Amino acid sequence: MTTKYKDVYIKDTGVVVGPYEAEGPLSKRFDKHYDDMYFETDSLESAEIKLMKDSVKMALSKSKMELKDIDMFIAGDLQNQITSSCYTAEKLHLPFLGIFSACATNTEGLSIAASYIESKICRNIIVSVSSHNMVAEKQFRNPTEYGAPKPGSATFTATGGASCILTNEKSKIRIESSTIGIPVDYKQTDPLNMGSVMAPAAADTIIRHLKDMNRTVDDYDLILTGDLGIYGKEILKDFMKTEYNIELKNYNDCGVMLYDLDNQKEVQAGGSGPVCSALVVYSDILKKIENKELKRVLYVATGALFNPSMVFQKQNILSIAHAISLESAL
Image: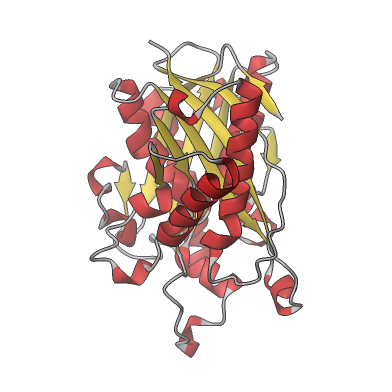
């Protein structure tokens, strides 16, 4: 399902990252970074909550807005019961929608917020996401103390908090349309090869978006997937060529862009997590749209819909992708 919008704009963003992200190629474009993984808190889970809170404060400060100007808070993360989002929402005292599409959560949130704004129910909405590498490792993997090696196809959960204020007031960037994803099952079972799990979902959403909008890939200056990593990126390109005879020339992946893959060997195949794509889009892509280096971008965040119990039960890993079309409004 694709929805078109007329009056949905991006007011401002706030981006806070951890030490690994601060060492990457986008380091100078983030609003704030921390040098350790606890971020002045006493637990890793609390550290992730702080990241999201910091990003909200940063977005409000940059936009010169106050909480009283905000109508709703929409947020999601990777912690069980979207803990970071719930604890952040309690402090904000705003109407709250907690959401989850794994690493596709950010575009889900933007789509929901855009619909509320376009329908004139709300004027200003904050959309936030977060993830924390060590929280994710505790929750989804064997304890890191085991020292179990990972294959090269494994991705590295990004650490950060990212918030975006959507508004009905005209700005330099608008959300032109969104396409809601459909869960797909391509019989993938390896939780350490998420690129292969999520690439088919990205292809499905891209194709449906192009069909609904009567466009081709050439109508976009850039098509950007969420976090397929170096191997998933190539799988998607091959999949699009083989299944749909479409060559993705103007294409990149946020999981590849976030880190220096040649020198940051610990990230292996690239970044992942709900915040991964948001960090790249908010710190880099939006600025290029503002500067008119890019006029129209299709931002397709991808997510693997699974929990460890289903993996242990040998169930297939489902995936989903939601798309947002970003345009220069000038």
